[in-house]
Amino acid sequence: MLTLNLSNIFLNQSAESKLQVIELIGQKMVELGYTTEAYTAGLKAREAISSTFLGNGISIPHGTPDTRDAVIKTGVVIFQFPQGVEWGEDEQVYIAVGIAACSNEHLQILKGLTRILGNDELCSFLAKTDSPQDVIGAINSPPRERRPFSEERVRNCIDANPPSALQAVAARGNGCAAPAKEVLSRAFTILNPNGIHTRPAKVFVSTIKRFDSRIEVSNPDKSDAFINGKSLMKLLSLGITRGSTIEVKACGPDAHEAMDALEQVINQELAE
Image (tube, rainbow, N blue to C red; front, side, top):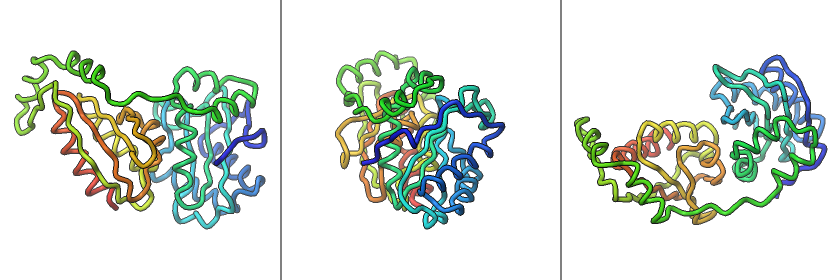
């Protein structure tokens, strides 16, 4: 299991661009013996393919499969930029978590990190703290228990979707509106060679964010807990690898539509 120590944490840093951040991460990974210099090219290539910005002021630069042979051993470096670095339109990064991993190990790393960094208040605190022990303590702490898709949450979903909302969905045409009290459940097997890493996770989340229904996801191989499927960081925390069969539950006025859209994306785009 990956644990962090003082050599992994770099606080009060400054950079003029995300390219400079990536170069700092690549340089430090070489110094720590995690990678060869070739890995920096992979960090840049990954960013060009798809932004590694997660939200909450956090990015997770990591390499492409083509540069995996540049990884000597699994490692993580965390850079803090209290003044922020522009990462994209309306995107400011205060914490950049550089990841170098062999095989699919990065999924387990993401799971450990995102359980903590998905907390808004904690993200703000870690962006400004001047103590590396704060960062280490937060990330190495055990996760808090997450509640499953309970009857109480189903009732909340019903209350949030009155009959008038259902009528509006039905009026759209081809879609089939599920009764608000109905909770749909389907199982999907993930065939993507690298599992649900950052890029496919973004596709997954952006697909279901178009719908009003509440979507929750579980990876039974790891835990029976369900997370909010519309949260990129929480989805990454599930550690979904190739061959994993996930369970998805949907509750709301357009639950059927959401499930059908997700099934299409998983079987087509995410199967590659």
